[in-house]
Structures are given as C-alpha cells and as structure tokens.
Amino acid sequence: MAQDNELVIAIDGPSGAGKSSTARGVATRLGLDYLDTGAMYRAMSWACMVGGIDMTSPAAMLERAGNAELQMVLDPADPRVVVDGHDVTAAIREPAIAEHVSAVAGVIPIRELLTGQMRRIIADSARIVAEGRDVTTVVWPQAQLRLLMVADPAARIARREAELAGAAGHERVVSSIVDRDRKDSAVSQFETPAEGVRLLDTTHLGLDEVIGTVIAMASDLG
Image (cartoon, rainbow, N blue to C red; front, side, top):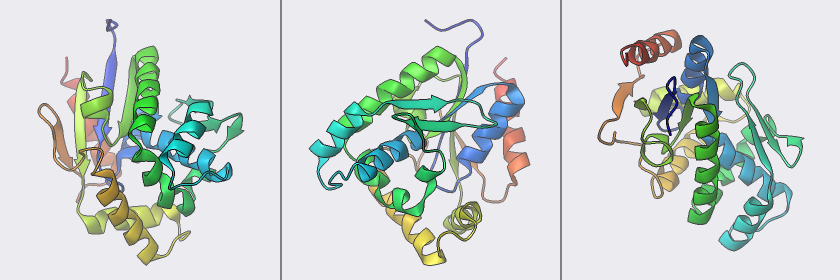
C-alpha cells in the first residue's frame, strides 16, 4: 500500500543520457533516496567475473547471482554498492565490467531476480529516485513521475568520455555505448517513452537545467 508521503521518481534512458547525475542531483535537492538499478547488474557482472564464471553460460551466471549478497547504499551524496561484504562501488565502473554487463542483464531469470530486489528497495524507501533502463515500465510503473531521458549519440559519447576521465579510448567508448544499446534493447525498451512516461531530451541542456526541469515536474505533482 502506498504511503501518504510517497514520492517515487523513475528515470529511464540509454547510457550517457545523464540519468545518474540527474537522479543524484534531484534526490539530493529533494531529500530523497537514490537507486542506480544499472549498478545492480554491474555488481552481478563483477561477482561473476571475479568468481571465474563462464560469461557465456546463463545457468552459471544465474547460480552466482542467486548466491550473491547485494547491498545498495541509497545516499545520493555517497551511493555505495556492496557484494558479499566487498565495497565494489569503484570496481563496477571499470570498462571491463561495462563490456560484460549486457551478458548478465540478458539472462531473464537474473533480470527477474534483480527486479524483485529493486521493487523491495523502492517499496521500503517510498521516497526515492530510481534510474535505469526499465524502471518506468517494469520495475515501478506506478511511480508518481516517470521520465525517459534521451540525448543524441554525440552528446552521450562526450559525457561518457568525461565521466571516464580518459580511462577508456574514444573508440572503446563508442563501441561500448553502441553495443550496450543493441544488446539491452533486446530485453528492455528505453528508446521510446511508454504511455504516461514523459520524454526529456537533454542533448542541449546542462546538468543544472535538467535537474531543475525534473524538480519542476515533481513540484507540479501537487
């Protein structure tokens, strides 16, 4: 049952659209929790890779994911990801993880497992900004505010390069974004807004402008 003061803001979109920075900024300014659902898939990818799991074996990846203890720290000022007692917040951002995360995310039983965890986190918080690929449509379609953030490819690539601060070359970043879009689109729809989902194109907007726009939308909820 929804709480009287419940406020869930769900933000979907492709890599590099600005979801994470926007979601954290909105959560900070509104005093809400913050959940990066994509980090949960990255965490399971890390667990599989560190555990020497065959990344071409859905059964092996599912077994590892099912046995992993995942904790998400929801503070937007310092969100943390902990797997089996190990803080992997930094480790899951390594390019090698990004290159394998779609293999994990493409296993439907793993998606179902993590979706259940996401729903419990959101329900327990009730006041949260959650971002990812299918939060608005699958994880929490009853969110008070549902947004699909998009940006043109050039802007997305530039943002991801800035985020990685030179840790990956231009061609690797381009390949990563293109491959992620292609693979993830097979299991989630994040390129066109579903009914009731607002479209926000961030191509020509700065971060503060985007955050302000989302907060204004939330304020209009009444």
